[in-house]
Length: 443
Image (cartoon, rainbow, N blue to C red; front, side, top):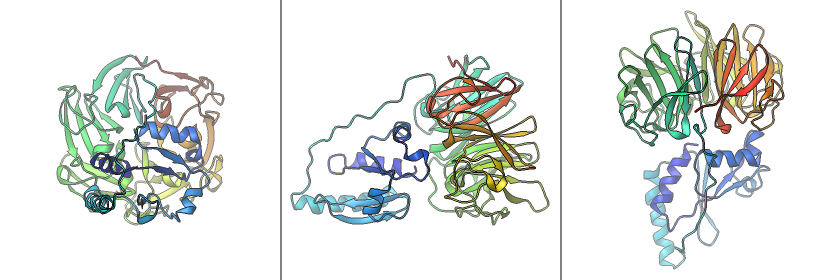
């Protein structure tokens, strides 16, 4: 989705000359579903028309081979340029301006205004919450209220106790009610300090809960376009930090989805650096610098081992403490190996799992695109389905009758799972003892 903010800049710069049409040719089964495409358009606040291409008809006609691909079509309908991969606005702006000038000279530019109305998400206290963590000592939840650009602190009863961030999209330090975030995701708590993976600011933020001050620890507010070996936090560009974890070390571990790596942030020295993954997208186990990862989006620990959800390979992977730590896959096979199959190890298929939590000796998994919550035994590699029927919905009730809508984050406390049910704009509570699922009344 990195291309969306770049396209938005081009759309605003050339509002009367450039028409953008998105074509969604989904990789995952759920991504082909029209309701899921609508959810994505609303979630990412896309203002241009989007065509659902589930059978790859448009993809084939335009001989597309990679996600994303940008096709430049002239006013007569002729393809005049093709670009594979992400774009940089500052490079494309002069090219588009040159094309417009050329076609304008031929009288081919029609500047009549096009009017589109974007579908709005249902209003509520939360908007596409991405992650949630539970504070056992404070008996409270911290929720990344992603599309409201803030973090909400609630009691276990759902009553809002505190709001972190002004709710305005931006990149600004300051007091809780004045500072600005942009689509926050992962959260980590250490006593009176909250750490935030500020996704679309490509930054790690620090919240002093005692003083109410928000500061930046790493990132410049701009997405990095090149792989690098890190450096001073405030001078180093990051790339879509999706989740964070206070690892069994002085470092904060970062799921750097855009780099297909895990990074570490030294909370004392302020340095950021790659921790695991060589930046290549795939699923290859091995020593930390040699492993291949694919958009890691969820982190968890049992106090020693580190688990992470590698969403593009629908894999759950593990790093064990050792003199030479290695990445090892528990489940998952490849970039195009996904599904909904329980079982042992190689038998298992998930679909774009994004959330993890360790609780009571068990690893729980938000199997996001299957709309289910599952459990994984890291020793036997056995995966079993606990909650969710697999259908889209927001039905409370018995474990496998309840429905979710792309659950993306998990927290656990006192035998209950708290689920960031992203596209339902809700926090759901799954009771491990009774099997019942309820919706938390956030108010």
